[in-house]
Length: 574
Image 1 (cartoon, rainbow, N blue to C red):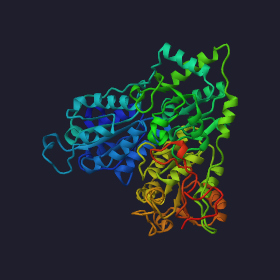
Image 2 (cartoon, rainbow, N blue to C red):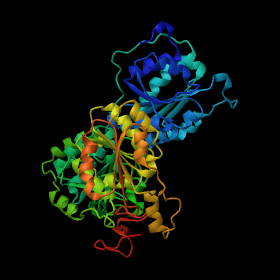
Image 3 (tube, helix red, strand yellow):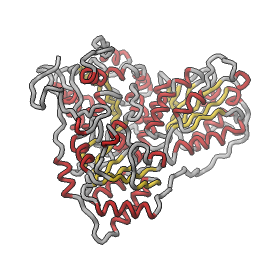
Image 4 (tube, rainbow, N blue to C red):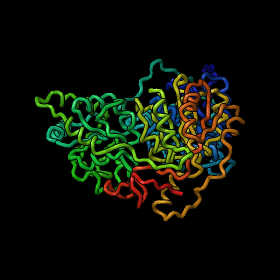
């Protein structure tokens, strides 16, 4: 620990990070933030040098999603700071606690268009819960403490703290460490009247369905949610951020809800007379056309953020409060009912509304992406942490994932940022070095994060990269096929590089397969190794994700195959 008598703004920042429980930061150095990196050289906090600032913010987000603790990233002024913004907006959309510390030009130069100057606090304002510039070293501790408090919640999210270079260098008061600093915890609970009305609606319901979202992960409410579903024998579904909240192998779990969700989940919600919306925000990918979503149901919405109530879907009862406390009070009241409702019969009916996931047929000899992912999830360890990039492979993975906990399936859900999968896996692997961490990526998104292979190699992170390469920007190509009369524009990646050779150039083990008969043995080699590996799966380029509710449509418009085909068709697209 640095000598407090020689304290500077930079040393103060690092001491506060340690006091807030931070053990690792992700970043990239530069001129304005150099004093902080100079202090970091003598500090116990571990710094991970990513090869791009965007990867640093994604890695901090992956660390935070996997642990529930605040992830921290750092960058210099100007382009360094602006390169963090995509990762911060990703954290904002998915309510992930991240603190970003950026360097800034010296205070006398601010506003003069100095070299590498950018008004990052203004730029970040729409991408964070708070962004502040600290112009006086005496304000630094207060600003950083507030940043961690705001990032943690009640609704978690990102905060940016911008620090000019002269403030980083400035002498500052002695730092007084707190031996046991309490972490701010949301303990709000809904009012008694709202809880009573919710219980009464549940008691009178015949076809209730629970929808769980990422708020359950943020509130550590997974176990409470599972207890509620078990107590009532309640059919339930999840948004993509809520995957893993359902108890493993619970027969009442209907799968993922929404545009590419399971048929049973969408049809059950469409048939429900009561929707219990728990820690979710009715994203357009979940609701489709809002005025037709669950139109036969009354809605009970539980969330920490009152701004979510009635924002998209009209709500009968709003339960504002920390979801873990809300569910605890609901469980208590339901358990006390003399005639507690049970919905096992309806749960079985809801399950029967669906069926197996429809899949495209692929030509003989071509490798199917869905075959690869079916095989992967069949053999992946129960406690594996899976990250994804964005696109078709993300939806195929979300449909098939059977995560044992919501912190085991990490994806850029709200923002849908390509390039997320590999750096997020790095963050998760650093948090849990002994766990199996697998990044499932497509060939488009992987090429946005290729330089991070150097980060994986330098720190010997045993991250596994499962590359689903269909030589296309697959989801955009699918929409062009279905909704733009097959006018394929800027989606052909048939000139992809040799990914195995690239990985080996970074001195990583890599293997390529293109035949279904190779999948199982290749996955076994891939997963058993305690070293980083790339498994490049060269897949058929025209395989589509089904089912699909077209944008702005309803569950009645869901597609399970191409127009003019049927599920039994032998037709194979060109």
